[in-house]
Each structure stands twice: as C-alpha cells, then as structure tokens.
Image (cartoon, rainbow, N blue to C red; front, top):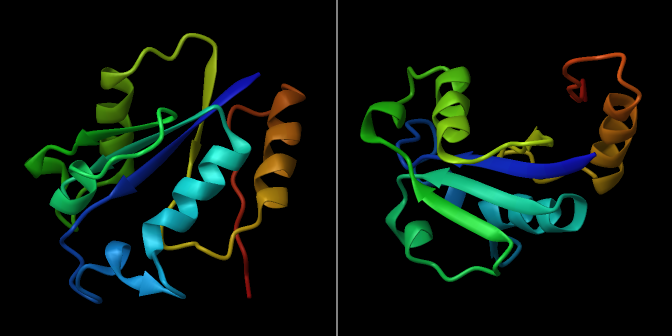
Length: 132
C-alpha cells in the first residue's frame, strides 16, 4: 500500500505561542515530523497558516498548502482539517498517516508497525499512543 503523511500546523497556540516553529535541539519542532514523514511515507503534505512555512522551500516530496482561516483556531476539530486536506488531493489507492508536530519523540518503528497492522486489512484505522 502507498502511504502519504499529513502534518497539520497552525500558528494560534495559546499555551505555548508559535510552538510548531520553536527550536528544539537546533531544529524547528515541525521539522522532526517532516523528516520522519519523508523516511516512512511516499510524500508529505503540510496544512498551515504559518507564513514562514508557507514560503519555505522544501524537497519535491513535501507539499504545503494554506490552511483556511476558519480551520486555524483552537476550537476546530481535527476531522474538519483532515476533510479539507482530502478535498485538496487525489487519494486514489493511498493511505494517510496523520503526524502531529507536537510528538517529536515518535519512532519510525512505531509508524512502520502501524502500517504493517493496517496492511493486514483487519482495521479501517490504526492509532498509536504512549501512556508514559
């Protein structure tokens, strides 16, 4: 099965302003998810209202699109952001992996294990989480 990654990013964090672009060990937080997406999937899509990301040059395997203003506040459900994403791309025979930028400690192995489990065809969705 062919997989693509979807990374939703917004600028309006109230708890930690600009958290997605803050530096963590010399790298902007969201870049950990972008790099992981490129290692584990065929293409990475980013939906954002963050100007510095909208105008950044990425590899050909990263596509950035402007997140509509009405989908960029803290009361929007992720399902609405994903539905907007699905309207923008052709998803013929693709499966989508949602990568949150605020999970930079996620392992490639976790994604690969989820893909293997999903590929068996017994589930319509697979999710990983940590209780630590």
